[in-house]
Each structure stands twice: as C-alpha cells, then as structure tokens.
Image: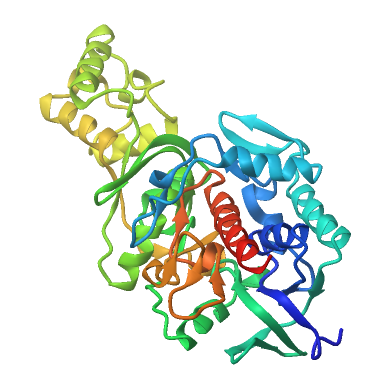
Length: 404
C-alpha cells in the first residue's frame, strides 16, 4: 500500500483491542484512519485473553480495581458501554458472577468481530509493519520498516512488554521518550511467581482456595501449585508488586491462609473440638475437610508432626503451631515468571504527561496514548481489556470533537 502521498486524520500505532476500538469509533465518525501493526493479523493478543475465552469486562468496575502512580479518578463504571459496543458488532455475552465472556466462550469471536468491522468500514491496515520512528513537523510522520505514513494526529496503542511471543514492543515507550515524556519502571503483571520452596514438590498439581498475602497486599481465590512456581487468581493479582520488588531486589515471602473462613481463635476452638471428639484419631484423619488434603499434609509437616500421630499425643504448642501454619503458610519468592509469561505490563507512560480527559500528550499536541502502554494496570477479571476500551473511548471523543 502506497501511503506516502496520503494524509490520514489519525494514524493508530497498534491493532490490539484498544487500537481497534479507537479505529472503529473514529471511522464511524467519518475520519480517515490508518492502523499500523507489527503482527500479520489484527488483535492477535486478544486470542490469549481469559485463557482463550476472553473475559472482556466485569460488573464490578471502577478505579479501585486498577493501579497507577497517579490518580485514576477519571475511570468510571462503563462496563455496559463496552458490552453494548461489542453487541453492536454481533458479540453476545454471558455473565458468570459478574465476569463477562462472549457467549461462544471463544476469544476469537471478539477478535473476528473487530476485524470484520474494520474491513466493513474500509480502514487501511498495514500489517507486518514495525514502527521505527515518529516525528512531527506540520504533520506527523510515522516511519515503519516498510513505508511512511503521514497523519494529522497519532495515537500510540502499541501495548507493553507482556507476551513477547504475541508481538510485544518497546516502541510506545520509545515514542514517548522521543517527545520528552517520562515513563515509569516496568514490571510483569498478572503472571506466575517462581519459588524454590521444597513444599512445592509435594503440592505440585494442587488447586486450593485461600488468601495470599505479600507484604501489605492480599487477595483471595484459587491458588495453583507447580513444582517450581505458584499461580492462580490471587497470585496473579499481587504479582505486579513482586515484579517491582524484584527490580529493586527487595523480595519477601508469600503467606497463605488456607482457612480464611475461620479466625485463628475459631480455628483453635475447631481443632480442640475435633481432637476431643476422637482422641485416638490420627492427625491427618482429624483434620479432614478443613482444606485441600495435600495442603493439610504440608501444614502438619511444617508443624513438625508426623502424619500418623494420634491427636491425644498433641500438646498446646502443637495446636498453636497448626493454627499458625494453616493461617500463615509461607512460600519463598524467587521472582516472577517474567514478561514472556505475563498477561499485562505494570507501569508505562507516566500519566503526569497525559491529559486524562483526552488521552493527549501534554508535551506534544496531537499525540495520544491508549491502553497498556500507559501506567495503568488492572487486576484479573476483564479489567485490562476494559481499560483498553475506556482509554480508546476517551481519546476518540476528543479527536472527533477536534477534527469534525
């Protein structure tokens, strides 16, 4: 495609979820839009979201589900706007306890619906084009490995460093820095955590519910144990903090409460009742039903009690130890599994450099940033795709107002 003589209203760098949403909204308003994408297909990373099922939003929505170095008061509950947007493209959804998925349970449904709309609107898409530079004179000039695109405005929707095999890129940060904009530290987020704790060899393959705590951060959900790592919803939600501590060499241990439904005092009472009911029961038999059996075995081991010990041989200190390790099971942390395994990047282009009412750079008029490239990341549950939509929606309204 020869773009040298063509002047676009907007050139969007990145055809992921945020870039596609923005392109559709701008083209529907009659603007001439171009998408530049380094992959050979649009929306490639969408296919991996929600374990291939694409959990795209959540009924529990708001700034409290996101992290940034700056205020996120501008983020509101717009999950129904995103649902309506996708529904207009033919994507019907289903609600699983507030988590929204396409009714087909397939992420490719969302990707293909976006691609179909891009095609229907006649939006120019430059695939397999890696952006190398963005400059500005009277117009913006976007230089790629294959061509040059001229545009009145540019939006960087290039994503972050997560999932390198799916086409992650540093270009968004480089563009920001070339226009004298600040970027924050970057960390993997929504990612598993590596550990060399010996207990993982026994717990490998186990899925157990509990509360995971790391320093002052905690989250409840199903924990997945592997021989050299831990993952699952609560681990993913706190992994960003572990990633930043890894950068600063300030790692601490993870603590797990396997019995969050009882306080320490209530658990002590429960153990005492069980042990008094059948004094000749073995410790493992007496503890059945409190939590996952493999977790019980490890708590008993941590408490320095043999599994065949009858409960009438336990003393007060043994009971205290059991309570402690059920509520404070400790696993060492060696770091995260890195950007290649991460679902999203924590950190990014500093929001102090962005007008959050428009997503426009405060350093360069006509330069916008949306999605993961910005210093905003959400917890598990559809929040990051919702942020991609939110930022694209804000940018689209501002750009349309200026250019129409």
